[in-house]
Image 1 (tube, rainbow, N blue to C red):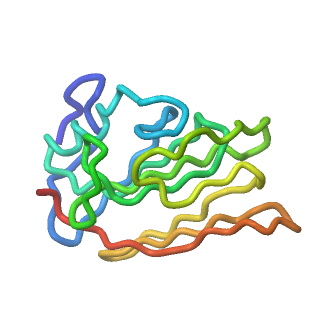
Image 2 (cartoon, helix red, strand yellow):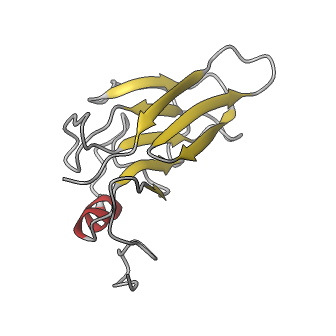
Length: 147
């Protein structure tokens, strides 16, 4: 599919049942610190028929994982998009505020990176903290076709 404007998902192809897509954006869609008002990646992917299953962000200086949600932030375990905010690469971390809806795990005490493994129909994640860190987060998810 051609790039169709500034908010289009580059090189996006319509999803087949086993396809999965990831996206990276600086600002998170959902966050404890404010309600994000830009969901253009998610909405554009849906309009192009992509099965977007994971979005990675780093703006907020915390680690946070959300349950799969639709583009309006409503829990959707069947077809939703899982968001990770991984802003703990070395700058100062933010204080944690009120927990946002559908937030499953969050931490502001550990610097580290997220290891994301994509496979046919599935993905896995592992937060890898600095040596000596206690916080960890691991899991798996299924790649799903869009509604």
